[in-house]
Image (cartoon, rainbow, N blue to C red; front, side):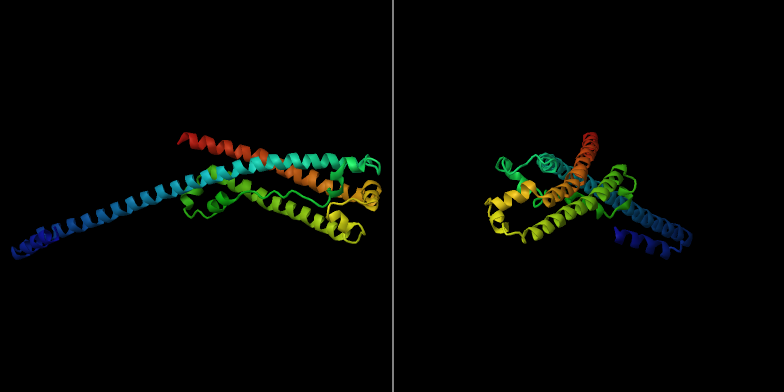
Amino acid sequence: MVKIFRSFRMRLLKEKKFRNYILYAIGEILLVMIGILLALQVNNWNSDRKAKNDLENTLHTVASDLKRDTITASELIKIIKKTQETSELIIDKKVTIENFKDHPRTRSLVTLYQPFNIQTKGYDILKNISDQRTSENDSLFEYLTQFYTLYVPNLQKSNERLENVVLENLNDFKEFPWFVDWSQGKITDEMIAYFATSEDYRKRVAAYNVLAFGNHYALISSYKVNAKIMLEALEKRFGEK
């Protein structure tokens, strides 16, 4: 094809048809420009399609993360509620030396905690999506970003607060003569007296209860509710495709 165009140009020059040659040259330039523009348009179209596909695949990963999180949240909510009920026995002084063995969980109320580490694989990918033309005009993208921006740091802080309290309590318990027996699951009279009648332990349980039930439980419950809302929005979007 190139040889044909070249021979045609040479023939025009030899025949001294300069006007026709100029018109031909202009036409050839226009064809090249049109070809370039078409190639750019196709490239942009392919890039847009890839960006949209990447976003949709990422949203499916986010949905999978949210499903796992809601299941985990439900399990933790049950555990925390059960722990809170047991804590109330200590706070309300319903555990005595006589009935202590009927409530074995009361001796570990302030030395165990249930961290809630949400799945962020999809969100991490979502944050790194480079094509802003796709993300900036997508309201669901914005809602998910706001959702994770709110809950990720707050849940991390809540986990850390509980962990610090547990470590502090363990460190304090090491000073008691019954600590080794307690760590091995054994029960002594001194231990029973501390957990059943000590005002120090009652205060520790009350303080831990504020963090575990008042804050941690409330945050996990809130996350679960809003995660379900996000899931519904995602499933609606998938259904429209």
